Amino acid sequence: MSRRRPADRSEHRPEHCSGGGPARQSDGGPAHRCDCRPVRRPDGSSASRPGHRPEHRLLRRVFCALAAGAALLAVGAQPAAADAVRNADWALTALHAESAWRTSQGAGVTVAVLDTGVDATHPDLTGQVLKGKDMIGFGAGPGDRYWAKHGTGMAAIIAGHGHGYADGSGVMGLAPKAKILPVRVILEDKDPKRAKARSDRGNALPDGIRWAVDHGADVINLSLGDDSATAAPVAAEDEAIRYALGKGVVVVASAGNGGEEADRSSYPAAYPGVIAVAAVDRDGQHAGFSTRRWYASVSAPGVDVVIADPDRTYYEGWGTSAASAYVSGAAALIRSADPKLSPAQVKQVLERTTRDRPAGGRSDEMGTGLIDPVAALKAAAKLKAQPAVPAAAGYPHRYFGPGPVPPADPPAPSRVLGDGVATTFAVIGAALVLAAALLWFRPGRGPRPARGPAADGG
Image 1: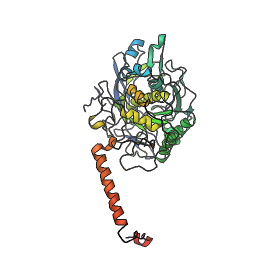
Image 2 (image 1 turned 60 degrees about the horizontal axis):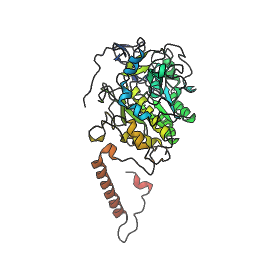
Image 3 (image 1 turned 45 degrees about the horizontal axis):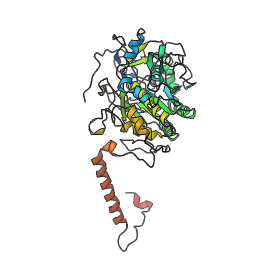
Image 4 (image 1 turned 135 degrees about the vertical axis):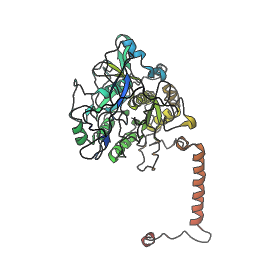
């Protein structure tokens, strides 16, 4: 599949990076690269801003503001004309949002945005933002330069309602009648207290997930992640996500922005049951920066996306952060239409109704393809709701699987392995079971005696 690289790529190392190599914590924590990516303003001019790579740390990992595992990269700009902002918002057209809104606009659904905070006073979000929780407890506050920039942008993509006459100005979200529950679990990249948050608030993400679940979230958006060289599953995060899924909460995360670099797995996207979202461009092609990994579920717009900023300007940025937010909006539409569907059913219906499906039905680049909210809503209307089931505790080495699934409607293994491979495994499995039975129960003999501890030694 073709890849489109940004037109130019300069480099800048923010103050927390030193020398020519990657920044590293003084305590020997994970390395953090700082990249600069170009973006365009809605008026067509271009600019660039240091990239953000949210990393989160629990015990030995660090959560910073806007991760490569998922950061949305954007740059400041002068306020654009209202028609320029709305006209530049190609993603809603690509997702056939107006057609989807005839069925659902997200009413009655709460989407928790676990991020850098959300500006509830932004004109595009007035009345949409519920009282949230700050799991960090320090750092920049409302009105400060480095507060809630990334989180506000994600919230507007999910549930923005625009502003002005007939709400014709600003950003319209995919689920404009959903509510946003802000949970601050990371700080912006240049927040002066960022280093302190990294060292003192390692539990912010799992604690934030549990808090969101206990305070009414129906969907959790995680436009963040850790794809550092030391990234690995962390028990507290995994358990928090399992808790959310078991309570019926849909969890969506960005797949990562490492496609032009190491392409490492990103967490929390790689945890079981999470809807991991890759990014595509205006042509529906895989965005070159979007991480290619086995856990990708679906794709959504992530290039030249219009972003609302707390400073009341609008930017065009890119990243799997934005793609994740669009899928959280789609999940909100589905949940609004049928609140009883389990997280596994929401995940499955999004995966099974995509457009621009890759060859074979799935790829590491795009998952099963570009989400189609209209088709997903139609398919969801035909489902019989199943109860949420907690995710299994043990994972295979490479593929974590789809997480909790309704007992009556298990996911087809072919979505990962392909029909032919799945069938082959089924035949081999049956043969092995039969062979084991023949060895265990021989004619005229009882079952073999169990071996004692001494027999297990050598």
